[in-house]
Amino acid sequence: MIMKFSIKNFIFKNQFKKLTILSYIYSAYYRFQIKFIKPSKLKKNWGEEGKESQNEETKENYLYAAHVAQNVGRICNKTAWESKCLVRALTARKLLNSRNIHSTMYLGVNYADSQMKAHAWVRVGRMIVTGGDVYKDYTVVDKFYS
Image (spheres, rainbow, N blue to C red):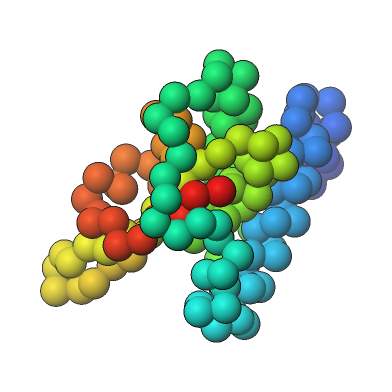
């Protein structure tokens, strides 16, 4: 019964069907890459290292970025595979790049509770697309412009 309800909502209530499907596909693709490819090889496809995107964007780009954020968050919360921050960031960037919207992906670290933690997030203009507010607790160690 739940499955029919979800499909019904997808067909009749989802204005962004293509974005939803692509979010699912890209999250699987990036999870596979992270799991099976060495980080040094992955990093080559993440964009221009050390460079940042501009701080302002058009209203249309902000609106699309908000749709991307919503879809990526919703889909990645429901995948059968692990879709943590790096998968979400890469998925969002791919969707933004498809519309020629420039973004910056940040990689950060934090040392808390005797543990080193890592986090990834994406910014478009002044908007954080993925990564939530917790990015403020992390020190940026690398950034990639795309």
